[in-house]
Every structure is written in structure tokens, then in C-alpha cells.
Image 1: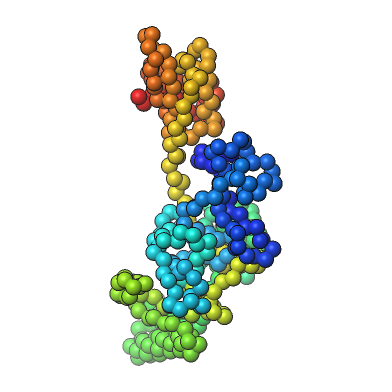
Image 2: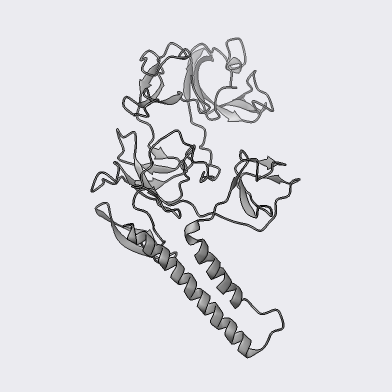
Length: 379
């Protein structure tokens, strides 16, 4: 049993699903030496068909029914609300997600992260227009923005939650943004024909007043968080400062940082900041990740010990099916050339075979639409 990449199927097995316990849980894959596909209902603990393995340790940004993950600030090997000091794990972003190193044997890690900033628009929703995954529209009634979580045509963003999600605005900074926006409005270029210097001076003074009110508002929110014992850093966006990180020097961009545990973001966390895995679906803050770049097809080597020719007599290389083989898969054959045995290697390549090239073989199962491949000699 292999997947689309030609590798053995892999599963995560948790025997104690009801209690949400990870005791006895682990990652398993179908053994290459298995007598066949595991019968339906065969548990991964059956060593005839399955084997345990250590998976590639990364955290996907898109977590089903979990709050979205933006910038990951720290990864811990234990619960930071319980273990002090908490051991840190080396990590970095990759196309899969956050790659975690030195996590051998760990089934669970704890992360401290920022929720990605919401985006908004004034472009209205048009029912007859097709929208791609990630597009953002504005709906006048109820005056909210929505983001497509899949390609949509004719689905009402307000009611069709399977196609759209509402773009939420953090209540913590709502008043700060309103005051700052009004101050910016007062500073805009005057287009009303008003040229009275006294009125223009008053407008500038009012803009300064609302700027100060906006600053006072954000500081009051910061003070409220500090009063709860939460950590706070406030630097201009884009500034970079040095800091001590897990026993080694590092740097971090400047931002407003809130929260007392691994769940940082614009919404004030409750409790100790740690997330417990439950059946509750946190759909309101679901993350919409960028479309991942597909990895290149894996090269799979095979030996066809029964092939005696390229195109005939049978069995020939032409009769070897390619429909379930990835591009770049390599097959080795031993055929008789000029009275002597010779080993040759052929690789599955995209497109039609060149009839003028003796190193090309068109397979019997080639289809120009669904299976456009050919064999190409490489040695």
C-alpha cells in the first residue's frame, strides 16, 4: 500500500482516543516485506503488516480545528506553564511548516506563536464572480469582510461557512485604530476649498489631540495586560533587537507581544495560555495557509528481472505499466544484445516517446491525457 509519491502509507495511531491520552501512541507505516495490503481493521501494532518509525518532525501551519499559526516565536519540549525553565527546541520555517529539530521521541511539543494579522478590503462581493481560495471581499450587510477558504462561485459569504470565513478584528486594539484613523483623516489634503489658516491650524491641533488619545488607549491596554503579569515588548515594527534565546544569542523583530504562555496574539489568552487537545473545533480563527509548493517526484528504483526485450517478444519493457509509477522512477532490466547479456536502466519521463530515438520506449498503457509518459534510457 503506497501513496501518490510511491512510498509506504503512514499513519498516527493513538489507542486511547476516548481519554485523549497519548500513552502507547506512535507513528507507523506499512512494511516493505508485508505479504500485502493490511486488511481493513488491522491495527498498526500488527507487526506482520506494520512497523513503527520516527517521522519528519514539523508543525503544519494549517491545523484542523485549531487556531491558526503565524510567526512561531518558540518551541518547547515541555509545558512552559509547568516546567521552569522550559527546554527550547531548535526550529525553523520550511515549506511544510515549522521544522523542529532535536525532538526525537517526542509526540507533543508546545509552541509560542503569533496569530497572522487579518486583512480587510473595500471591494464588494459580486455573486456572479468566481473567487479563488484566499480572496477577500466586503459585504455591505452586515458590513464585514470575508475570505474564501476554497474556490467559490455563487456561495453567500455570510451563510456559506464551508466556503468563507469572516475576517475578525481584534477588540483589544479596536478603539486605538478608530482614534488613529480619525487623526489621519484630519491630516488628509483639504479638498473642500477651505483655506482659512485658522481652521487649518485647528484641524492640525485636533489631529494631534486624537493621536495622543490613540496612544493613551494602546498604553492603557498594555497596562491592563501587564497588571495580569503578562510579558510585554513594544518596539517600532521592523526593528530588530538582540536577545538571549535558549542559552544562545539570537534576534527578534520588534512587535507588541502579549500573553503569558505559548498562545500569543491579539486576543488576550485565558488561563495559563496552554492549549489542551479536545474535541472542540476552534473554527473562528481558522488559518488559511498559502498553497504549498509540491515537492519533486521521488525517484524509485525497481528491477524487472523478467523483461527480455524492449518492444517484443514478451515480456517487454513496453508492457511494464507506468500509470502508477512516478515520473523519474527508474527501472533496471537485463536483456540480450548481440548475443551477450547487458544491464540497462530506463527512467519514466513525461510526454510522448520520440520514435526517432532508439532510447525511447512508448508503454502500452500510455494515454496522452491521463498517463502521458514514456520510458527513456539513461545508461
